[in-house]
Length: 250
Image (cartoon, rainbow, N blue to C red; front, top):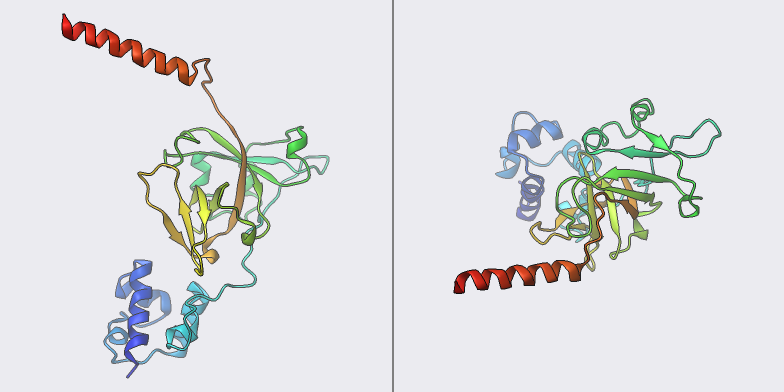
C-alpha cells in the first residue's frame, strides 16, 4: 500500500488541476479511474510517475515525501518567440494579434503559415529597433484603469523568465490563453502570480512551464483622445452637484 502522504499529494495534484478521477486517469494512461490509487489499493506505477513529471513537471521525490520542491523547472522551458516574421528586406515585422486571433494563438504558436493571416508592419521609431516586438489587442477590463478594452499594447519579447519585473505589465501566452497581467513571484515559491490592476479580479497562480511566450508591454495605442483633463471632469462634477442641490431646495 502507498504511504498516506503520497496518496494525499497525488489527490492534491488532481484537484489542483481541476480534473475528475476519470479525466486524470485518461491523461495518465490509467484504466478508467484513479479511484483505486486514491484509496491506496493500487500503487503508483512508474508510468504514472513518469507522466506526472512529463506533463506537469511534478518532482517524483516530492511525490514520495523525500523533497519539499513540488515542481522541477525544465531547463528547456523557453519563453522567447516561437516564430518571427520578416519583410522583403529581411527586417523583422511587428505582427498584430487582435482579440479574435488571440483565441487561436496558443495552439498555432509554432505554425509559420498561421501568422500569414495576421497584419504586420515596420515601425520606424528608434525605440522599436534591435528587439522583437508584437502588438496585442486588450480584451476585457482586468487591467483598468491603465489599459482599456479594445486598446492595443506593443510589447517586447522577453528572453528569460528570470528577467520579469514586478513593476511592468506583460502579455503572457499560456498553453490555452493569452493574458495581459503583472507578474509576481512570491518569496521561496516556484509558482508565479498573474496580477490584474482591476481589483475585482483575483490573482491567478501558474507554473513557469505553462508559459509559452512572454512579452513586456512598452507602449500602447489608444483611441478617443479628448481634451478633458481630470480638473475639468472634477469641475463638471462639482457643477452638477450644485445644480442638484438647487433642484432639491426648489
